[in-house]
Length: 220
Ligand SMILES: C[S@@+](CC[C@H](N)C(=O)[O-])C[C@H]1O[C@@H](n2cnc3c(N)ncnc32)[C@H](O)[C@@H]1O
Image (cartoon, rainbow, N blue to C red; front, top):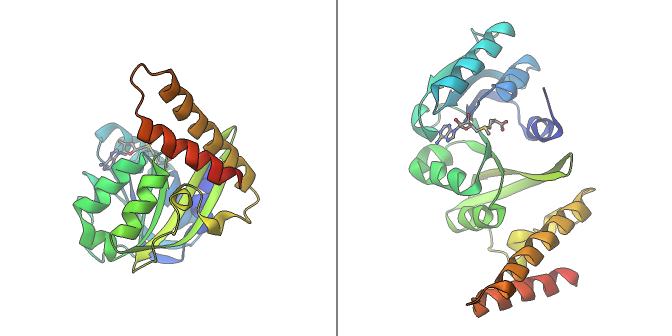
């Protein structure tokens, strides 16, 4: 089923000769990309056998076995540098995405990346900009009450953001129709951290002040 989160990933995809979907699970993304003609071929990979078997069954039911290859393995190890012109890593934690990119940085640099972290978006944006990647676009998707960020990224340099808050709420997202919902999510996240620190018997005052400051910045 193509949910709003998956639809946003599809909408941000470029025309590609080969798309690699890392951590494909059900393989809905490569199936839709190939079916719509956005990608001529695709590689659907997963670290676990079970999800890859589900992926293979769905690919076969879609009649796309000749165009979508399944590969079992961790991260970008299953794809050679330059083999895919587009790499998608979606539905995983931001730190896991960071570790997959760091693990095979040359492969990551050789393709356009579409990243959809489930958390740690702040850390992922920092990591990308610090490590010679450019965020070329970003979308927000709403699914039920959940908000997702989808980043398109390529190798290249980008000026670091001026303020720490910008890594949480990038200025380029301000005009997005779902920006208010993203702002609300961040406000709740900061308030939760602050109240946790305030209730702690030995609060980390530096961290507390940092989050109070972020909340103030956000209110501006
Ligand atoms: C929650 S699913 C996301 C599926 C799909 N990408 C999506 O966005 O709907 C995460 C999948 O990533 C796989 N996975 C986790 N770590 C991985 C890694 N290092 N390399 C490849 N696949 C991984 C898991 O086995 C799981 O099937």
